[in-house]
Structure formats: structure tokens, C-alpha cells
Image 1 (cartoon, rainbow, N blue to C red):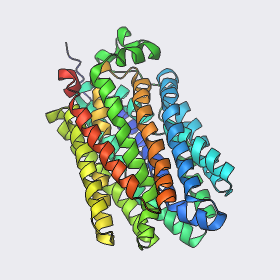
Image 2 (image 1 turned 180 degrees about the vertical axis):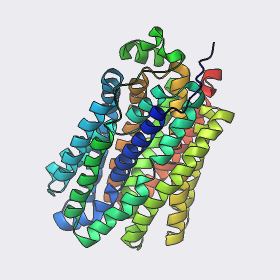
Image 3 (image 1 turned 90 degrees about the horizontal axis):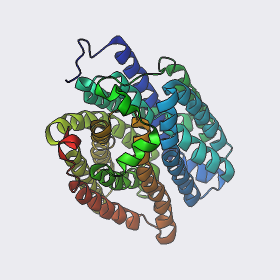
Amino acid sequence: MPHTDARPWTPALVLTLIAAATILSLSMGLRQSLGLFVEPMITGTGITLASFGFAMAIQNLAWGIGQPFMGALFDRLGGRIVIVSASVLYCAGLFLMATGSRFGLYLGGGVLIGLAVAGTSHGVLVGIVSRLATPAVRGTAVSILAAAGSLGTFVIAPGAQAMIDLWSWKGALAGLAVLASVMAAVAVPLGRSKPRGPAASPAAKASFRLAIAEALTNRAFVITTLAFFACGFQLIFIATHLPNFVAICGLPPSVSAQAIALIGVCNALGTLAAGHLCQRWGNSTVLALIYALRTAAIALFFVLPVSVGTTLVFAAAMGFLWLSVVPPVSGLINSLFGPANFGSLFGVMFLSHQVGAFLGAWLGSLSFQWSGSYSLAWIALIIVGTLASLLQLLSTGGRQAAA
């Protein structure tokens, strides 16, 4: 019999949703603002674009490798201890970046911030909300979390640029470290939580190793994991290299900050829309559509002249499609396996995303260093995105994946 609850939107769920959205806003806003430091760090330290890009590649790889472990810790210990620990790593990483050395950039901006994001992003926070929400409102709650969690970029990116202009890039990184520490305080309401509904049965509480083994035999899960590579490849290239790209095209740094902020605003709308469409068309279909539309936007931006107008329109389009993958991906995992081992399963799928992110950040730098332009990288984004859209269409997944 389906699980019912007279009060699906309990005070505990609402409070948790607010806290989780705040943490996600801070984590994503801080991370997506790091591209603003490319030019001042290159000018002020002699660090090359290739070095900065490689540090961001390390960050995304550390995020991907760390995500299954952070997810497993969350499944066992709850969200609070994971987020507090990750907040400390975030602060340490930003302070190490401020030293201006390659070691500080690679260890702090790369490894530590990568691990910190793994503990303060969707793999943990969506799992927390999914456990408290009943199946009737779970999809809506996850969509709200992903949408609200993107709004931090709208504030943090312009704020980071203002701190760079008023103080220095080192002072701005210290200011961002203070913001990172706020996540630890907000995590206080996020204690242990048990899955609600059918997924709370003892059979659903299998060890994360058995859950991963089962998932890797599921066609929809495997195909979605492979296609997820393109998501990281495209988005992290843009997050890392768009500020430098528009600067090369003669636009002022303020345009980059505006573009990143616009991504955050449109992200909220796109994520809510994706959650609604998943209920009608199914998770795999919506994912394929997102990859196709995102790739089309990249192709148009590549062939059109770069101006303030085209940059902001591109940012709006990408923002609408940025984290809109979260509702269908989390919906697929929850519908197939339930929320009991969500953190571990999302971590495995997200590792593919972050391998793509590593290559997107690093190869973007190498493309520019070798050829003097980003053209090869833009073409690669188009090819990989097209393949992902076609691959995702193969993930029919049955009624479960469409639920």
C-alpha cells in the first residue's frame, strides 16, 4: 500500500529545506565565483592560465572522487558532521589559494575545495531532504532545493568581483572564506534522518557496497552515469574559462560577474521547470532534452560574434539548463533504489560527471595554450554534448525511471 502522510510538509522538512538551500547556495556560489580570480592571479603571481585551469581540474576530480565517500559518510553518520567538516576544508582551501603559490592553488583551490564541495552539495543535501520528504512531495522538495540553492551565485559573484576591485584578490578570497564558515553554523539543524515511506524498510537499508553493485547492473543507471560525463565537461569549462574568454574578446570583467550572476538566477527557474517536466515526460527524456538544448546554446554562442548582449543571453540560457539535471538525476535514483543509499549512489554517478569536469577545465586551458584560442574546446563541448543527448535517449528505463 502506498505510504501516506497527513502532513507531508512538516516543520522539520521545511526547516531542513531552508538550511540545505542556504548551504547549497553558499557552496555553489563560492565555487562558481572562482573563475573571477583567473586574471588577477595571473597578473599578480605569474601563475599561468594552464596552472589555474589544472587546479580547477584537480578540484573537480577531487569532488568526484570524494563524493562517493562523503555520500557513504552521510548515509552512515548523517549530514551535520559531513557539512561541518567540509566547511572547515572550504575555509582552509580558500586561505591556501590566497598564498599565491602553485602549491596553495593546487592543494587549496584544487584538492581541499573539491572535497569541501563534495560534502556541501547535492550528493549530501538532496539525500538529507529526500529522507525527510514523503514520496508524494519528494520531487517537489528536491526541485525547490536545487532552485533555491542556485541563488547564492547571483549575490556572491558580484560580491566577489566588488571585493577584488575594492580590496585585492587576496582580500576577496579571505572574504569568501568567512562566507564558507557560515555553512557550519547553518548545518546545526541537519542531524541524522531516516528515510520515510517504503524505502525505509529493512531491505532498503542494504550496505552501500551492495547498493552500488545492484545499481551497476541497472541499464538506466549505467547509461545516465555515462551521459553525465558531458554535463561536467560542458559546465566546468564554462565556469572556469568564460571569464577569460570574454576578457580576450574585449569585454570588461563586470560582464563576467553579471554573466555568472545571471546563471544563478535563471538556474532557479530552469530547475523548477525541469522538476515539473520530469513528472510528465520522465527523467531520461528530460535529461536528453537538457543536454540537447545546452549543446545548441553552446553552438550558437560559438558561431555568433561575442558582445555584451550575446554573452548575457548565453549565460541566461546556460543558467536555465545549469542544475536542471538535478531533479531528473535524483528522481531516477530515488525511483529505482529509494533514498536509503542515495548519497552513495549519487556519488558513483557523480564521479563520471567530475571526470568530465576535470577534462573540461584542464583541456580548455591546454587548448588555449596550444592554439591561442578556445575554438578547439568549444567544438569539443558541442561534440560531447550531442553524444550525451543521443546516449540518454537510449535510457528507456521503463516506468520506474520515468516515475
